[in-house]
Amino acid sequence: MEKEPITIEGLKKLQEELKDLKDNKRPRVVAAIAEARAHGDLKENAEYHAAKEQQGHIEGRILEINDVIARANVIDVTKMENNGKVIFGSTVTVKDIENEKKNSFKIVGKDEADVSKNLIYYKSPIGKSLIGKSSKDLVTVNTPSGEKNYEILEVKYI
Image (tube, rainbow, N blue to C red):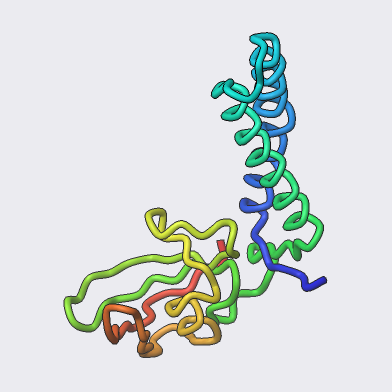
């Protein structure tokens, strides 16, 4: 069983989702199944089949979250000495060499990654390119849309 790195925020988010699934969504879908059963013939009961399908998704997600939590290797970068290197959990400010545009990314685990919030998966092309680099380094990232060149401006452990 391979350990999967996760930030403290990511672990809290997964625990909250698990609690919501167990305490709210699971009981609602069980009640919906019971109500649909009360309507009679189950073969042609769309409400019953939809509720059973939803129950399958909820139970699958509960198993998935439990697995991630069991394999979690929680990394708290705030307790580490900042030596200027990009590591898992660090926040990196970069400048695109082509258009001078600045951007900040936080390097996170698979379940936390969300490009719209600048949370970058550490095994993604940009994550792999940044890990191990330091402030002022130039980084080339091979993306599906082509090569991107960045300069690392700042590395924070927040």
